[in-house]
Image (tube, rainbow, N blue to C red; front, top):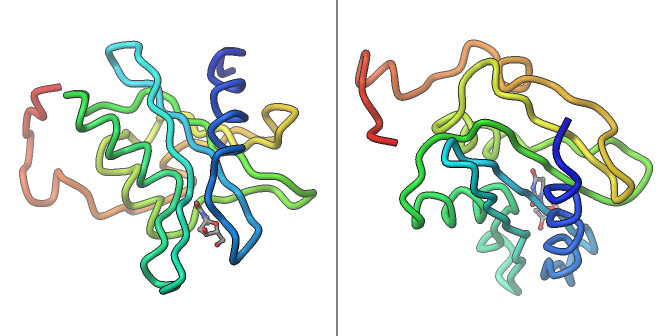
Length: 138
Ligand code: THU
């Protein structure tokens, strides 16, 4: 289970999402192998396709900090329907996660369901296809 700190951070970053067009705010928090937490929210744009997802924002913050391994992730949305990372975000997470990395799908109150990266994106195309046995340096 994710720490209370991780859930609280997801809740606060979700609250800062810029989603005036969809009204659907998302918060994502990644825990790196270094133990640090990296948070991101969705940022929409009047030119709709330019909007960015919360998971991608969190990945960018993590990589900018020099971390390259996700050991746990929280994705949080509001409403009754279980939040599920979009297909593109699954691919972004997979770049830095493993098949067994837990991804916690959350509402504001906490975890609703935990799945693995491999369950979210089975038979994934990933770094190993291009760089077998690579060392990510993380
Ligand atoms: N969204 C995310 O931030 N992450 C996802 O995995 C699903 C969708 C955002 C994008 C857009 O701003 C809003 O949710 C509605 O699609």
